[in-house]
Image (cartoon, rainbow, N blue to C red):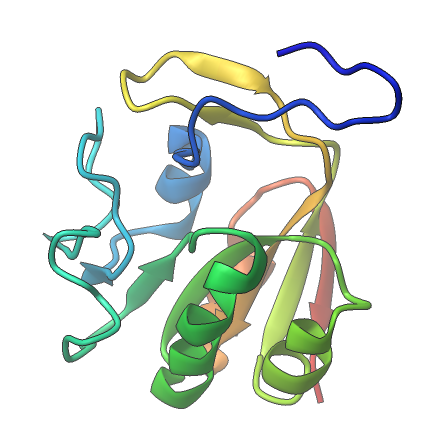
Length: 160
């Protein structure tokens, strides 16, 4: 949909898959609690989709979390803060209440990715470049070390 008169274009999907090279750089995850129903590649050993309601299930092991964005991300980031083992991918919107209350106080490290990611559609095809820069958020010392050593371009910051 085109943008006219200051209105924002409305996407035809809310599913934006993590580029494979990001996942490859971070290593194996045990659980993705907000996995896509259809995905051309696995993001973890175990997946909860919208049909499973990943927020109602027990989280275990090292978690990969590319949550639905906007307000729907808040409960997933609450769980990441409590779980303290894994990595989340979010737009770099550090001024938001969610970041101030749920990310900064609990995260172990951040990797502010250089440039803007190109996410993928459910069929694996490339979507357009994202409208905002992205960042990876580590929970736990082990995942902070993974971010520091992963080789992805960007600025690494240890929290605390």
